[in-house]
Length: 381
Image (cartoon, rainbow, N blue to C red; front, top):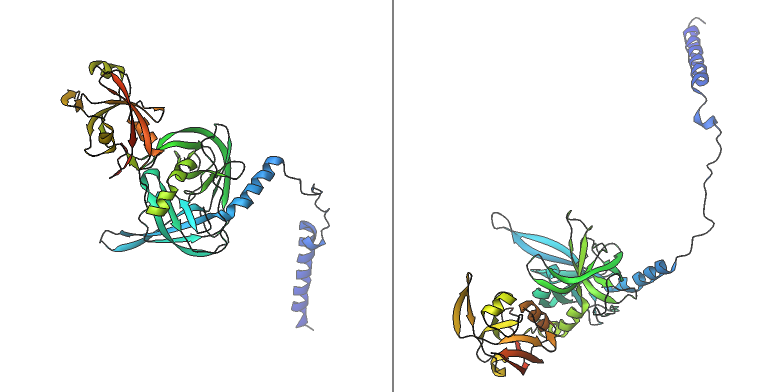
């Protein structure tokens, strides 16, 4: 019995400690009874309003046409060892033959291209053609059951019009979609120094990897190709820009058939500075604006049309210029005030097109029909 006393004392102390702590700190949680949580729950999912339903419909209809493009290029480390680098962008299918329109900078310098469709299937791709100055490229895949996007028109776009941007930047996820409005239509300069005429400026967020994806109107028609974003933070919050789809449609056949754009040229060397009233007065020109022809390339379109270059070398500030040549003021009914206007007109034509040029030979206003040549080395005049 004496041997059991310490054990009984231990049990008694443990029971006393349990009763003390239970009464002091409350019963175990399992003994507590609480009222159920009362939440306010909707009786049914609310119906979408008209704009929301349209956004959903456009997304479902267009996203099968939007692809992810992964490019693999080779760079070299400090010891000239080759290293593989990958980049990602978007694009969209334009026909059943598997042609895909995207940005040139998405596929630039790529040794290998892979396309991931919205159904997550992977296909190798080949470059069909590229146009660096327009930041456009066409690649192609061989795949069944492709769904092409519908190409609209960018000529009727207005500031304030709603637009939707869709891209497939990640490949393993579904395409992303953002919306905004057209905030401006203007010329912009890309990071490599090239210009985009009539670029579509929008506040629709352009997510990383969305370059090359379509910018859509509210009908789901492609009106632009998302190309870049101007952002102080480097993120997707900023001003987005898209290449107008009409600029792409104008060169698509060249890219597919020839692998390049047969950019037209007159075959002239223009004055390297904008014309103004002061310069026009000093040179005794008949108009205050236009493109002064300093030199005509022998055998060029301008030469065949009888347009003449200058014959007297002078200095204007630090510039050595040649004066005495003809002054072009109009091409195909469009006023030409400077070389930028002339380049814009050239972008809307292909080599072999016939255009009507209005120019001054001395003080005499003349008209000539010119068949445009194919530019060499990227020249536009």
